[in-house]
Length: 387
Image 1 (cartoon, helix red, strand yellow):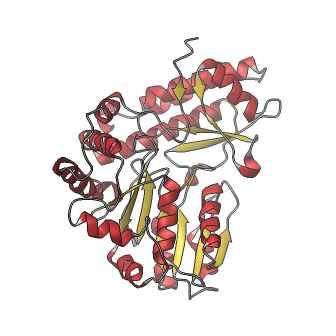
Image 2 (image 1 turned 120 degrees about the vertical axis):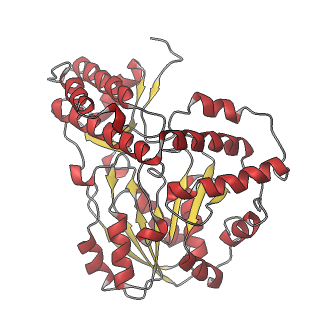
């Protein structure tokens, strides 16, 4: 095997397109330079369709978790009441952020591997009509669940006067989103997933309703203060030093998305999901989520009776394919395949073939080629004109 060559199929960080790498290698400019100001202004506007918003999108230098915390500290203060829907490890992270702020936390725990239904959220919120902010996870990276955030946001509006805050870190750029149209008040994301960049950029799309609560919120904040970013953006800049090289890369990412078209981008992600799921089923592997809840960006697969998910991951690594393991109580029980960003259907065929080989080497009862054939059938039935 070529030791310096491998295929990254984890749910982030994801592979970087060569043209994006090249863009990030451009000569550095000052972050107060007019060229950088033009870039900040243009990127905030060009991101708007990706987030489904009519407002400019804020750009923060930080990880996806910084976006989560920024949504919390800008909308809540100590002893405010907040609700969080936990469908996996990253919903749990939202809850931990809120706990650190000493807010009154109302937690709705959903079994890992299933989404939160509107009926469950309705029954839950009837007990807590005074919550100020409800936190949801769009794609739960740890399980491959895509929550129905459009329907859940409607429930929040019907049951409370609260804001709806959505973690879109592991799916924005690969699935549709609608801030104003869906009634989402804050939608945050990060750069290292479907947006095909290294970690280091965070994004926030904010509704007019959310701005009113942000302005009135007395909670102290400095670096993560959304007001600073909005005010600086009005002058085509950022309040603090941005990750300029990542801005260069983001410009090229948006070029790629616009060239492919948003709907075609979403269709490609759905196809990759369907190919992986068909391939895993044909190999007799158990999927963690059902089809209704399955995310177009990441799929979680259970280990077998005679082999562990951890052993399979190690064998795949020897073959040059890298997948992710489980988190918290799912550690060692599942492996996760990322299929987002700079990935296409042929990458899925390669990943499934590698899984077939790895399973055979582990002595699992596998029919070589069965998974690939099932995935090929999904691809054959999709017209190239539809991608």
